[in-house]
Image (cartoon, rainbow, N blue to C red; front, side, top):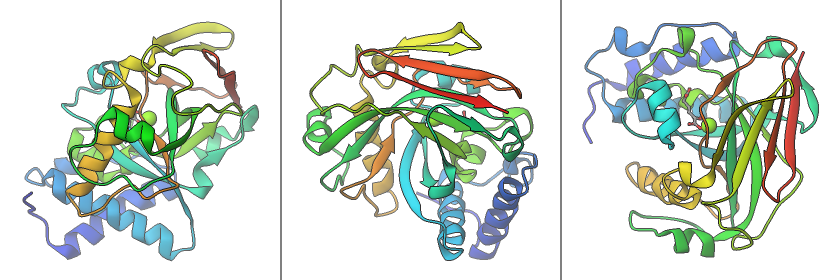
Length: 264
Ligand code: OOG
Ligand code: MG
């Protein structure tokens, strides 16, 4: 895949986008200034941000896919999925209070997450391959927080911005890889006690495990893979819901309990 930016520009843009996250402020999408940049340039910026965090001592705790459902693709107006990484400080407690001020403009998404027990590598993995390499499946809520003003971005800008990653909450229930049909598993999201979104696992690329396979495929573009023991969030089943201070969220997962939080 082709690139247009030199290493110095990639490093400069990584610093620019990461500083917006660290300082909790909005920026304009970077393709406004670099209209010719490619998805591979954006991928390199994201990996540079990951390197900066690791160098600072933050720990990598997982990976995520984004824009894997039609609801999300339609909501954000992009053409295909993206991926990102999760650091230790992104983790928030189930049932806990979340400091609204540690985010810019948080939105929540109901997701299904996989924990792998074998390396997943290459371009031709099937749903069965992914299930064979899965230790357990857990319900999770992602808290996305695009650094771009009003969440206005294109696929290249969002990829560079670590696919809007900033928070996640893992539920307390887990299941084996074949305990449920993940495509028909239902989720119901309530905000302040009212249902705001609902859906089923099939919203994510027909089956959430297909999202894990697609992540391995996308990582192959940079000669990377999903190592055994990786926590992978497969992408929002529903559209993302914008939070305001004081909002409570409760997501119920069929047969897997619920995940909740309050923004204070
Ligand atoms: C990009 C990240 C999307 C998902 O689950 O689809 C995402 C965004 O919408 O800001 O995490
Ligand atoms: Mg997500």
